[in-house]
Length: 264
Image 1 (cartoon, rainbow, N blue to C red):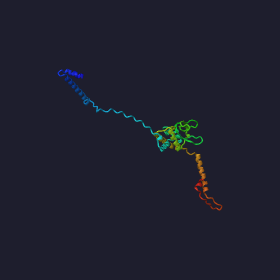
Image 2: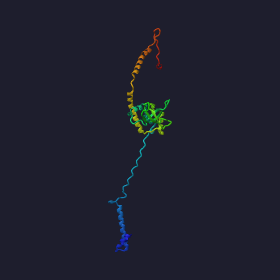
Image 3: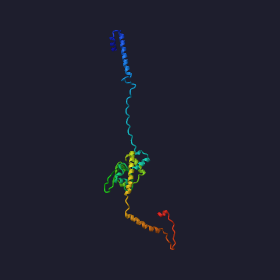
Image 4: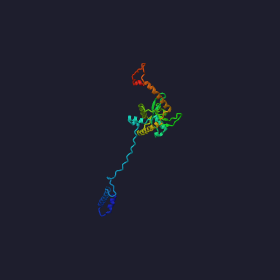
């Protein structure tokens, strides 16, 4: 209004009221023109309706899924997986002589140990590491976990002599599963267990030819004794097969012996 009054005051050819209305009208036209130029998209103008949406935030990184463990297997599959991870006494002795049979070591495999002093008492355990021979026996030793039922979390040092060659029983497999669930034994991812089972199977395959090659030939003295015993047994067998003669020279027939009588 101040600007309009100034502009109207400069025009002295018109009445004061007219000069004021004309100035106001011109100001209104100038304001509308300015507003229209800002609202109408043109050269260098930006339309608010067509403005690009703001950039979206990047999606959050998904958390890695936990690896499936042994205890998540079905009972039948768990049984097969545990049996595939069992190390026998023969395989451990072969590994002690030649570690290249099963690269990667024996850690976290399972063994069947005889922990009885007088009577046989087998318990399942998990291998921690193999140790070099110590003492007069000259045999390798193992450090295992879970062998002492009175102190399940403790580690036990044992010799390979006490490792069984026979597979786990159903009760021992159930004990392994229980110890895996309670944390006494280390639970393994299924992928790691499969890899360990494949290495164990390959080691057993390599051990078979070496075991046959290392089998000692029969001693000459033993072979001669067996041959002499067989030679002496032939005349006795022939004499026993001949029917005995009676006083009058007639042969006496005997009934044939049954299979049970022959075995006795």
